[in-house]
Amino acid sequence: MPTAAAMLPRVLVVARWYPSHDQPGRGSFVADLVATLVARGASVMVASFEATHVRGVAETRPDRGTRAAAAIGTAIDGPAARGGLNRPHSWGVAGVPVARLPVFLDGDRRRPDDVAAAHAAALIPFGLALARAWPFDVIHAHTGLVDGTAALRLAQAVGRPLLVTEHSSTAAGELGDPEAAALYRLLLGEAAAIGSTLGVSPDTIDVLPNAIPIEGFPLGSDRDRDPDALLFVGSRKASKGIERLLRAVAMARAERPQLRLRLIGPPGTGEEEAAWGALIAELGLTGAVRVEPAAQRVEVAAAMRRAGLFVHPSPRETFGMVVAEALASGLPVVTTPSGGGDEIVGADGRYGEVADGLEPEALAAAILRTHGRSRRPEDALPRRAYVEARYAAPAVGERTVGIYEELIAAAGVAGGAPPGDHGETGPAIA
Image (cartoon, rainbow, N blue to C red; front, top):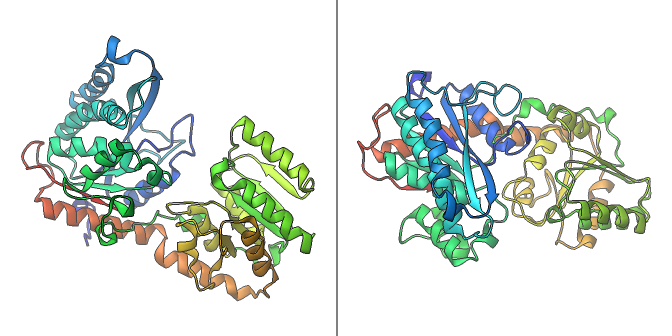
């Protein structure tokens, strides 16, 4: 591994899910990795997207996204190098340059090919200019559609290796579209495919966890916990399993009426919020459920130190950061078999409980089992140690830089080489 900052690669991060002035919590997991890389001494720039859905793009100004991105690129490539980049201090990672690239999408056309092409049209002119002013060594895209597919075209244009990390919990559904599946196949080469949906060996894809800023989630004291307080942190969208959670809590309260639930996170749609309110009343949970807006990370960490049990009801997740954050706080976790939280918790019950299924009854039974266990203050220490070893930012950062170096070495890319000096390079998927 490198020992000096000068030896670390220059990284262009491509992520439409990245914090912005109007959505400071969006893509916080990407910002966490960026912060980790910067802390290690790496140089990082971020290319994100501002997508606008309009009508008549193809007929009126098909090049408007390309022209706008090229204008940003001109500022970067000119005397005031990188002057076209934002350097936010109140969102994302303070001081890390970010380009918000405009993408114009025809409101009547949602084909994956069209969406990917529109993002590539914004990214490529910017990336070409950036490669001249700041020759990056590797591109790291977050999500395959559309960040990865757009970044692949840039990687081929500049001869740089590409790493794609998939975060989208809806990717499996998206790959049911043959056009989307064909785009995704390009990320592994013409003859390759991704995941069981496309028939590829699991060995083809590595698992790279999100970087948990563990220092922001200190271990809670047992005396400060309320054993009857259940906590959920996350969006209240229906896809996150909110109905399942409310019904499970009502079932658990039939046996232990002292249980209470606190929900912290951004609201769902107006229709969803109305449905949750009606369901809370219908289940007799009025007064037993607190619904709160999204909170800053420090406030979430404080809530995790006070709760007695963290409940994660989502039917599918690619990771489940809040599960790892809760464990780092010493908080026991109950989760559903979602493909994310259950992998973090593990099946042996040492760090939490995985429900036997997605039914509310199964989640209620898991809550009751965990709530009924005797607890010792020392039980929290192994939970934190486990997260620290596997998911803490330093460990994930070291592994990520190692992947970058392997890709750069395999591609034969020398740091600082201008675009076009190397042949096309294939991406890696994590």
